[in-house]
Length: 238
Image 1 (cartoon, rainbow, N blue to C red):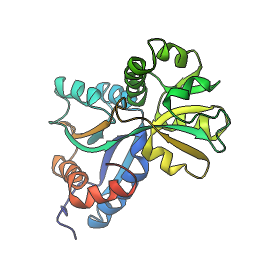
Image 2 (cartoon, rainbow, N blue to C red):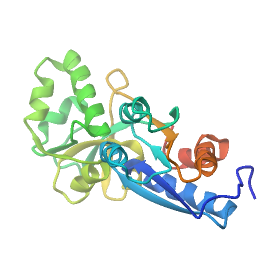
Image 3 (cartoon, one colour):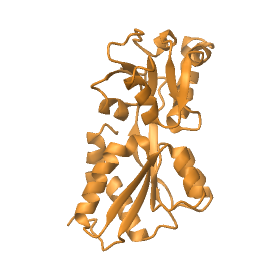
Protein backbone atom coordinates (compact mmCIF):
# COMPACT_ATOMS: atom_id res chain seq x y z
CA UNK A 1 0.00 0.00 0.00
CA UNK A 2 1.28 3.48 -0.80
CA UNK A 3 1.01 6.60 1.28
CA UNK A 4 -2.14 7.43 -0.70
CA UNK A 5 -4.05 4.29 0.30
CA UNK A 6 -7.58 4.93 1.51
CA UNK A 7 -10.74 2.97 1.94
CA UNK A 8 -12.70 4.43 -0.95
CA UNK A 9 -15.65 4.31 -3.23
CA UNK A 10 -16.24 1.54 -5.76
CA UNK A 11 -15.63 3.88 -8.69
CA UNK A 12 -13.62 7.05 -9.21
CA UNK A 13 -14.53 8.98 -12.36
CA UNK A 14 -11.78 11.19 -13.76
CA UNK A 15 -12.44 13.65 -16.59
CA UNK A 16 -9.12 14.47 -18.29
CA UNK A 17 -7.84 16.30 -21.36
CA UNK A 18 -7.09 14.04 -24.33
CA UNK A 19 -3.37 14.74 -24.14
CA UNK A 20 -3.27 13.16 -20.66
CA UNK A 21 -4.53 9.75 -21.80
CA UNK A 22 -1.30 7.73 -21.67
CA UNK A 23 0.05 9.25 -18.47
CA UNK A 24 -3.27 9.14 -16.63
CA UNK A 25 -3.95 5.54 -17.59
CA UNK A 26 -0.66 4.70 -15.87
CA UNK A 27 -1.62 6.79 -12.83
CA UNK A 28 -4.97 5.02 -12.78
CA UNK A 29 -3.29 1.61 -12.67
CA UNK A 30 -1.10 2.73 -9.79
CA UNK A 31 -4.08 4.18 -7.94
CA UNK A 32 -6.06 0.96 -8.34
CA UNK A 33 -3.12 -1.14 -7.21
CA UNK A 34 -3.17 0.69 -3.87
CA UNK A 35 -6.96 0.31 -3.55
CA UNK A 36 -8.34 -3.00 -4.77
CA UNK A 37 -11.87 -1.80 -3.98
CA UNK A 38 -11.64 1.26 -6.27
CA UNK A 39 -12.03 1.23 -10.04
CA UNK A 40 -10.78 4.33 -11.89
CA UNK A 41 -12.89 5.23 -14.92
CA UNK A 42 -11.62 7.88 -17.33
CA UNK A 43 -13.42 10.21 -19.71
CA UNK A 44 -10.86 11.67 -22.13
CA UNK A 45 -11.92 14.51 -24.43
CA UNK A 46 -11.19 18.12 -25.26
CA UNK A 47 -11.13 20.23 -22.09
CA UNK A 48 -13.93 22.43 -23.41
CA UNK A 49 -16.18 19.38 -23.95
CA UNK A 50 -15.45 18.06 -20.48
CA UNK A 51 -16.25 21.44 -18.94
CA UNK A 52 -19.59 21.52 -20.78
CA UNK A 53 -20.43 18.01 -19.62
CA UNK A 54 -19.72 18.96 -16.00
CA UNK A 55 -21.77 22.15 -16.32
CA UNK A 56 -24.67 20.00 -17.51
CA UNK A 57 -24.44 17.65 -14.54
CA UNK A 58 -22.23 14.82 -15.76
CA UNK A 59 -20.94 12.71 -12.91
CA UNK A 60 -17.24 13.37 -12.34
CA UNK A 61 -15.02 13.23 -9.28
CA UNK A 62 -11.84 14.82 -10.68
CA UNK A 63 -11.19 17.11 -13.64
CA UNK A 64 -7.75 17.66 -15.20
CA UNK A 65 -7.68 20.31 -17.93
CA UNK A 66 -5.09 21.27 -20.55
CA UNK A 67 -5.48 24.93 -19.63
CA UNK A 68 -6.64 27.03 -16.71
CA UNK A 69 -9.50 28.78 -18.49
CA UNK A 70 -11.98 25.90 -18.33
CA UNK A 71 -11.24 24.90 -14.75
CA UNK A 72 -11.38 28.51 -13.56
CA UNK A 73 -14.83 28.82 -15.11
CA UNK A 74 -15.97 25.77 -13.15
CA UNK A 75 -14.39 27.18 -10.01
CA UNK A 76 -16.26 30.48 -10.51
CA UNK A 77 -19.47 28.47 -10.82
CA UNK A 78 -18.74 26.73 -7.53
CA UNK A 79 -18.44 23.29 -9.14
CA UNK A 80 -14.81 22.45 -8.24
CA UNK A 81 -12.40 22.99 -5.41
CA UNK A 82 -9.35 25.22 -5.91
CA UNK A 83 -7.45 24.02 -9.01
CA UNK A 84 -3.72 23.33 -8.78
CA UNK A 85 -1.25 23.15 -11.67
CA UNK A 86 0.29 19.68 -11.77
CA UNK A 87 2.03 19.54 -15.17
CA UNK A 88 3.25 21.58 -18.10
CA UNK A 89 3.51 20.78 -21.79
CA UNK A 90 5.09 22.33 -24.86
CA UNK A 91 3.42 22.95 -28.23
CA UNK A 92 5.42 21.72 -31.23
CA UNK A 93 4.93 21.33 -34.96
CA UNK A 94 4.18 17.79 -36.16
CA UNK A 95 4.76 16.81 -39.79
CA UNK A 96 4.40 13.44 -41.55
CA UNK A 97 7.47 11.22 -41.80
CA UNK A 98 9.65 12.54 -44.60
CA UNK A 99 8.30 16.08 -44.12
CA UNK A 100 6.91 16.43 -47.67
CA UNK A 101 6.20 20.15 -47.28
CA UNK A 102 9.81 20.76 -46.18
CA UNK A 103 8.80 22.70 -43.07
CA UNK A 104 12.02 23.28 -41.15
CA UNK A 105 10.64 25.71 -38.56
CA UNK A 106 7.67 27.80 -37.53
CA UNK A 107 8.55 30.49 -40.08
CA UNK A 108 8.12 27.90 -42.84
CA UNK A 109 4.63 26.87 -41.74
CA UNK A 110 2.86 28.70 -44.60
CA UNK A 111 4.69 26.34 -47.01
CA UNK A 112 2.36 23.55 -45.92
CA UNK A 113 -0.67 23.20 -48.17
CA UNK A 114 -2.78 21.53 -45.47
CA UNK A 115 -2.41 22.70 -41.88
CA UNK A 116 -4.54 21.32 -39.04
CA UNK A 117 -5.06 23.19 -35.77
CA UNK A 118 -7.24 22.72 -32.73
CA UNK A 119 -10.48 24.66 -32.71
CA UNK A 120 -10.21 28.03 -30.98
CA UNK A 121 -12.12 26.85 -27.89
CA UNK A 122 -9.80 23.83 -27.51
CA UNK A 123 -6.69 24.50 -25.39
CA UNK A 124 -4.22 23.46 -28.11
CA UNK A 125 -6.12 25.67 -30.56
CA UNK A 126 -6.00 28.65 -28.21
CA UNK A 127 -2.28 28.11 -27.57
CA UNK A 128 -1.70 27.85 -31.34
CA UNK A 129 -3.36 31.21 -32.01
CA UNK A 130 -1.29 32.87 -29.30
CA UNK A 131 1.84 31.42 -30.90
CA UNK A 132 0.83 32.69 -34.34
CA UNK A 133 0.12 36.15 -32.93
CA UNK A 134 3.53 36.26 -31.25
CA UNK A 135 5.21 35.00 -34.43
CA UNK A 136 3.53 37.75 -36.45
CA UNK A 137 5.52 40.29 -34.48
CA UNK A 138 8.73 38.61 -35.67
CA UNK A 139 7.86 37.37 -39.15
CA UNK A 140 5.45 40.08 -40.32
CA UNK A 141 1.91 41.11 -39.49
CA UNK A 142 0.46 38.84 -42.19
CA UNK A 143 2.09 35.67 -40.82
CA UNK A 144 -0.98 34.44 -38.93
CA UNK A 145 -3.17 35.23 -41.92
CA UNK A 146 -0.81 33.27 -44.20
CA UNK A 147 -0.95 30.25 -41.90
CA UNK A 148 -4.72 30.37 -41.45
CA UNK A 149 -5.17 30.51 -45.21
CA UNK A 150 -3.66 27.00 -45.28
CA UNK A 151 -5.80 25.56 -42.48
CA UNK A 152 -7.69 22.52 -43.76
CA UNK A 153 -9.54 21.75 -40.53
CA UNK A 154 -9.82 22.65 -36.86
CA UNK A 155 -10.29 19.67 -34.57
CA UNK A 156 -12.02 19.29 -31.21
CA UNK A 157 -9.07 17.75 -29.35
CA UNK A 158 -5.34 17.37 -29.82
CA UNK A 159 -5.49 13.64 -30.57
CA UNK A 160 -7.75 14.38 -33.53
CA UNK A 161 -5.25 16.99 -34.73
CA UNK A 162 -2.42 14.47 -34.48
CA UNK A 163 -4.46 11.78 -36.26
CA UNK A 164 -4.72 14.02 -39.32
CA UNK A 165 -0.93 14.10 -39.57
CA UNK A 166 -0.53 10.37 -38.98
CA UNK A 167 -3.12 9.60 -41.68
CA UNK A 168 -1.39 11.88 -44.20
CA UNK A 169 -4.33 14.28 -44.22
CA UNK A 170 -2.18 17.21 -43.02
CA UNK A 171 1.23 18.51 -44.01
CA UNK A 172 1.73 20.13 -40.61
CA UNK A 173 -0.07 20.66 -37.32
CA UNK A 174 0.53 22.15 -33.90
CA UNK A 175 0.23 19.58 -31.11
CA UNK A 176 1.73 18.99 -27.67
CA UNK A 177 5.18 17.47 -27.43
CA UNK A 178 3.77 14.61 -25.33
CA UNK A 179 1.40 13.59 -28.11
CA UNK A 180 4.13 13.93 -30.71
CA UNK A 181 6.39 11.65 -28.67
CA UNK A 182 3.66 9.01 -28.54
CA UNK A 183 3.47 9.07 -32.36
CA UNK A 184 7.17 9.38 -33.16
CA UNK A 185 7.07 6.22 -35.28
CA UNK A 186 4.98 7.99 -37.93
CA UNK A 187 5.70 11.72 -37.61
CA UNK A 188 8.56 14.16 -37.23
CA UNK A 189 8.70 16.89 -34.60
CA UNK A 190 9.84 20.49 -35.11
CA UNK A 191 10.36 22.70 -32.07
CA UNK A 192 8.76 26.14 -31.88
CA UNK A 193 11.16 28.97 -30.93
CA UNK A 194 11.08 29.73 -27.24
CA UNK A 195 10.52 33.44 -27.80
CA UNK A 196 7.11 32.84 -29.39
CA UNK A 197 6.06 29.55 -27.81
CA UNK A 198 3.33 29.40 -25.15
CA UNK A 199 3.87 26.71 -22.49
CA UNK A 200 0.70 24.84 -21.61
CA UNK A 201 -0.22 24.58 -17.93
CA UNK A 202 -2.42 21.74 -16.71
CA UNK A 203 -4.55 22.29 -13.57
CA UNK A 204 -6.42 19.58 -11.68
CA UNK A 205 -9.25 19.80 -9.15
CA UNK A 206 -11.81 17.68 -7.36
CA UNK A 207 -15.50 18.22 -8.05
CA UNK A 208 -17.56 19.53 -5.14
CA UNK A 209 -20.14 16.89 -6.04
CA UNK A 210 -17.56 14.06 -5.97
CA UNK A 211 -19.03 10.75 -4.81
CA UNK A 212 -16.22 10.29 -2.29
CA UNK A 213 -14.28 13.56 -1.85
CA UNK A 214 -11.47 11.89 0.13
CA UNK A 215 -10.75 9.41 -2.67
CA UNK A 216 -10.98 12.16 -5.28
CA UNK A 217 -8.48 14.28 -3.34
CA UNK A 218 -6.19 11.26 -3.03
CA UNK A 219 -6.03 10.96 -6.83
CA UNK A 220 -5.20 14.66 -7.08
CA UNK A 221 -2.50 14.16 -4.44
CA UNK A 222 -1.05 11.30 -6.47
CA UNK A 223 -0.86 13.50 -9.59
CA UNK A 224 0.93 16.19 -7.55
CA UNK A 225 3.25 13.80 -5.71
CA UNK A 226 6.85 12.92 -6.66
CA UNK A 227 5.54 9.54 -7.84
CA UNK A 228 2.95 11.18 -10.04
CA UNK A 229 5.37 13.74 -11.41
CA UNK A 230 7.80 10.94 -12.29
CA UNK A 231 5.08 9.20 -14.31
CA UNK A 232 4.14 12.44 -16.06
CA UNK A 233 7.79 13.17 -16.82
CA UNK A 234 8.20 9.72 -18.39
CA UNK A 235 5.43 10.61 -20.84
CA UNK A 236 7.06 13.94 -21.72
CA UNK A 237 5.33 16.38 -19.39
CA UNK A 238 7.43 19.02 -17.68
